[in-house]
Length: 370
Image 1 (tube, one colour):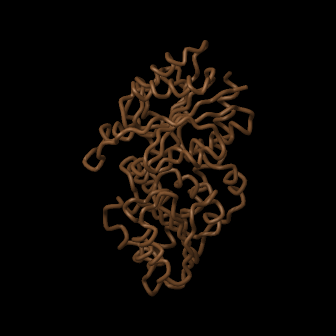
Image 2 (cartoon, rainbow, N blue to C red):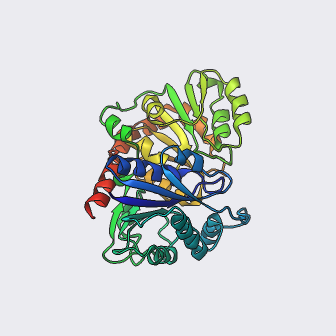
Image 3 (tube, one colour):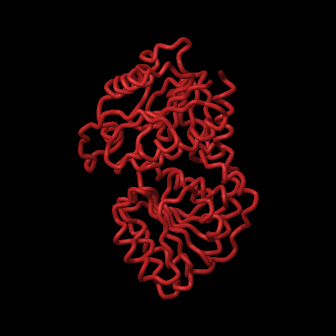
């Protein structure tokens, strides 16, 4: 049996995206007969209990996290890890030994705080022969990896194919672009069925599992313009959103507005919407796969360049950073029919970004390489 270890985390600072896309890949691998184990560190906002509903999860000891408010770049991502890379590798190996795990065929790592140092320590510490192959899921391209396979499902325009030059071994196979996006199986099934959007009747608002800046609330406020009162609005709040009470109050004040809790999949809401207002990140590819025109706000620094390039190539309309004045632009766009038509016309172009088959493609590679 193919044995695969996943190392990823979620927290109030990190968000939920890394764990959720790893879960999607793990589900497809398990469907193909693989044995899956997750290694996740306990911290406020983790999703360990969610993963435990489906998979074996070995939890790593909770660490006292440094304040992330004044940090940026590699300092920020190191703080997300909660300890040194050497300590993290040691904790992972101890957890595996305690669980009497007998090695692995593949090690999948999706964490901005880890690089070649951790990867080397894990390969050496696992001590299996041959050593496990390594899949790194990344989109920062700011550090070295010693992986056999690298996945970056994001779009960077002309730079997409060259961002990891010198950062991965020459023999590493690179899977680059939204064609490999880790989407649930329902997206591939629905991809050929969705019609292009030509009229605005329903809006979907979703800013990820945490939304610490309450972009959800700001979007609802913008949609309260009297001229937009006829629009139906679906609002989705993630598991870790700290602003639920504020959002609930706003939803109650706006007609034709429905508040949804965490969804097993957003595919149904995406398919019936005519426009989305939301964050960058993994949901970008879900919306694109089902041809949903989107007004996108970057809620993390690593989303900015992707959003800019997608907007430049007319796949989305980029509104700017979450800390900006993007909310004042929403009514302007939706009430200007010429501008709105330009956004709606992005439906057909966004469909070309991803067919939704990423998990099947990647799972085939992992399982066939053994």
